Structure formats: structure tokens, C-alpha cells
Image 1 (tube, rainbow, N blue to C red):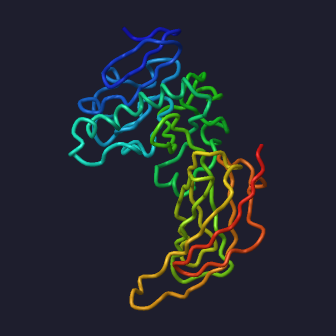
Image 2 (image 1 turned 180 degrees about the vertical axis):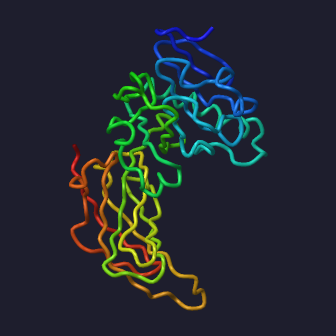
Image 3 (image 1 turned 30 degrees about the vertical axis):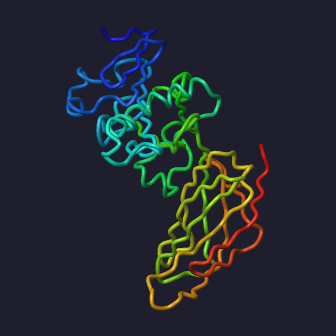
Length: 293
């Protein structure tokens, strides 16, 4: 029987669990369902609001969007902390798939927001091309958990919107996502790759910025478990060329800036007060001071 207007269900693989308004698919089953008709699988017509959490699209979970909002957690495939080799046996088979269940339970028990951002692809999200939720949510970024319509405040609801987020390997799983940018002082005739690392107490998180040749700046996304204002240092490593027979002494100078997602106003960007001088393969550390909101 399809859910009524004030009912909802969880889809855990092929199981349905009734709850309240809306329907939540916890890594809906992929085998035999990816090519099934909408009458045979979860879809946006099954409730007033349908969300799906995808954590194992390369194995047991469905690859296609099936709700109003579809969360592709860590890209929707390999989850942090899960085994990556067959020797782990049953845990290898089920860990990614069950992560959707653990994420949802954790979201119900904690106030830490599991916020996601709409983007064309996971690769584009990591490259910093999707920084807010204006299109199509008019800045109301969706969140996993018992939030009315996932926190989306627009009508009519769009359908099959892919949203992305990064998580930690254990509860409460939530991460804070930051945009990182590096602006070169001078153009270069080759791609420039810079590893950026945030440090907070004993916690580190890294990302790579690629600045295409003959372009001024590049950007990326760093996900960190602590609030941005608790990050006290940022490290840079300008990656060397492939000249293994000779030490690369190339240097670059640039400006570094960062902002917490969603970035709706570039005036909220925080930049280091001085230009950063980097030599190939040499790590440079700078203090980073961001006020707590």
C-alpha cells in the first residue's frame, strides 16, 4: 500500500519502515531496481517529500536519483572507515551499504548538521564549483535527519537533485566544508598543484588545489571535523615537477583565502594577510585566525 499524505517510510534496501511525513531511502537497493519502473522502486511520487541517502552505489545500492533530494555521501560509493579489500569478508560487502543507516541514526541523535550541496558531479563538488544552494534550493541547503523537507524551503519541490557531502569514518560523521583558494601573483605555463592542509589540535585535513596553466587561481573543498574557527594553522606544499634527476627550485607567490560553505557572500572570505611564498616540495606553515560566529 503506498504511503498516505501523513505517513512515511524508510527504504533500507528492499525494506520499508513507517514513520511520519515523507519517505527516506537508506541506500535503496540497486540490483534489480536500477532499471525498474517507478511503480517498482522508490521515486519522488511516493510521498510529499522523498529523500535518499546513497552510500554504496557501486555495489548494493542504486546509482540513480530516486527522490526529491538524493544525498551522495562521499560520492556515494566507498565510505571512510570501511574495508577496501575482499579479505574483510562480510564487512567488506555490507559496510558501505549500512553506512546510510548509521548516518541517519546519528543525525537523529546529534545536533551536528549533515548538510549537503547540489552539484553536477562529485568531482565538480570537490573542485569547489558548487559553493551554495541557490540553484535549485534558493539557499536552503538540505540536511539529513528529521528536518521538515530536509530543510528545503521552496515550492514546488524539485525532483532528483543530486547533493554531495563528506563525512568522517565514525559517529557523529559530520564535517564542516570549506572553500580554499590560491591566487597566483604571476601566470605560469604549466599546471600548478598545491596541497593545502588545515590543522586543529591533533586533527588534520587536506585537499589539493590545481591552477590550470595561464590562469590566475584555483580552488577546492576541504572537509574538517572541527569548526572552522578552531583551525589554527594552514600548511602548503607546492608539488614538484617530475624532474627526478634534479632538485626543483621553482618558486611561486600567491594569496590564500578560505570561507565556510555555503559561500553566499564573498565578503565573508578570510585571507592570509601576507602573500605566501612556496618552493617546490617544501612545506610552509602559516597561522590561520578565523573568528567564531
